[in-house]
Image (cartoon, rainbow, N blue to C red):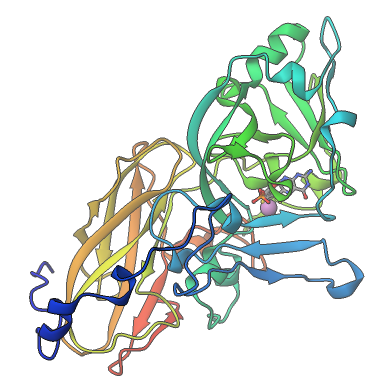
Length: 399
Ligand SMILES: Nc1nc2c(c(=O)[nH]1)N[C@H]1C(S)=C(S)[C@@H](COP(=O)(O)O)O[C@H]1N2
Ligand SMILES: [Mo]
């Protein structure tokens, strides 16, 4: 499906006069330096889209979705990182806040911000994805939504913080402790049980996101960052970790996030997010102005490791071609892929299919729905199909 771009720019035409005289901005000094940067007023404004399921009754309970199709890169700017709050964003002053580690430990400890800053920190890139991401595609009928409103409950950042293992070691984890309860200091007291093994070494108490202190909506002054694990476990505004022998079975992990299977059983504790990819450009709601050259590009990620390969299809999965990975594939992070394509003006069905280094491959929608009971909403990672009609319009369809 490869093709050279060639001759997409306009010819010089009436422009020679300008080429000689220059642009008006070259005639006067530019604006002064300023304390903080802002996007250009001439660039299209970038916004998250809000979903507030309970309306004015509980405006803090809901989500905001990252406009994936308007961004291009592996790092989500902090002001566009998706949000998911179960009862609003608390305004925490770290002067009156600490993190307690207790339960099955030799020495219960409390850490404040100043103390935490004395510990060595590590930096790593990684995504956070809500278990409910892509949920609109689990509905029986395809929703006419843009990419970011289907798949935008994921964002990827560079996180910096204290390895949790250091703090746990200091408290002295007792032999019988296999799990810990993590509780947030928000009005939801959001709580999850987290196994200490086998991934304990990866866990981070994150204090910085993309180089700046966490923003309130991302958990200021600190949050858990558990690479590859479902978003909900990345507890924000963390107030305590209680070491325990087994899981606590909190409301947040029994009322939600379990997966109902076809045979009537339910799977609990699906921690690792599946392998997934989506073509962000072009995608649903966009329009191709003319036939000819296009670059199909998008994002791939997996909770199990690095992305090994992304294939793209323009015929609804009948044939596949391997896309180029545009960024070094990082462990449990966004990976960019792209592939050149020539649109001949006929209807097409654009798909991408990611495979990770563990050999996990994205299922088709039929495979995914066959595994789960009707009404299953969480952990949707099936292949996305964008239908392109002869008029150049793209929309979300089920293949
Ligand atoms: N304390 C607390 N932690 C929380 C939540 C919450 O409501 N309260 N939401 C969880 C959910 S469901 C997700 S998907 C992620 C979202 O993180 P973000 O808002 O930084 O994108 O945070 C998790 N941590
Ligand atoms: Mo979530």
